[in-house]
Length: 352
Image 1 (tube, rainbow, N blue to C red):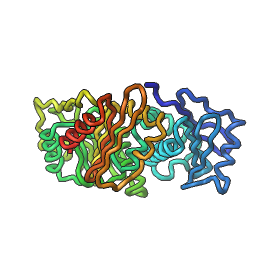
Image 2 (spheres, rainbow, N blue to C red):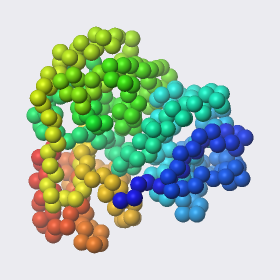
Image 3 (tube, one colour):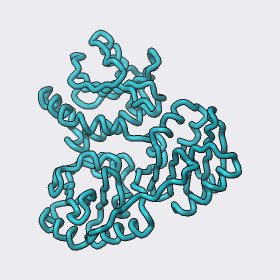
């Protein structure tokens, strides 16, 4: 599957590009940027503070922030997905530098975006973004029920309201307060963690935008792949928090392997009402959703108590989609309808 094609660029009021990052899409020239900048101020084209332009098989989403700074994201993806990505990129900047990040001087802005280049690219490549945003969900590492329960119990023992465990860059467990953050905040936090056993100021644009909190990250010594995140105020200090983590997490000898997805499903996305999502082969799912317009309804919020849909995608691939008791699951398979539906229903029972 080809990686996402895009161009992300930041422009000031003189139509100068302060920062750009692209893959397979050319960043517009100064002459092309000028009308884009002017369009961002055109009444009637703005929706939810966004401007949109469909040009040359690309969707342009652009948004004017403070100080005449324009953020722009161009991609062959659908307009909704392009806008969702731009929201994430703006949120990333606000999390790290605060809501007035664009009010800084031009040299400072350039340094800010240069320092954020890797997280920006990681945000753009995050899978299933539109679906996760619609359902306020975040991807979690799939664990056995025993491992998930033990990690959650250890988090609770810390006595810190907003906390989570990250394993290999994915959420593995989280407190209820952490899950009350917006799905965008939850998905971005693993990308901006400081070095292990460190802390950094962080803003929460959707939860507490005006005041910086402390984001602490402590490595679990018995499981080097695990990092405990906590968002808090002035207390506890980092050494005290590390001591609590060392006491609460006794993971020596634990592997935390992810259970295998049944081989009849080449890709899978499962979302439950709490906002936890599990995914297998997300790039494959993204490719299918981009190529099949009839899948759009899967990415819309729904309150259906129970439904099953089954679609032929060509090449022998079929999509099965189930909604049941606040949960949603979709999968790609080459099995016949009855077998595919039965297999997915059984899998949903084990995941829930």
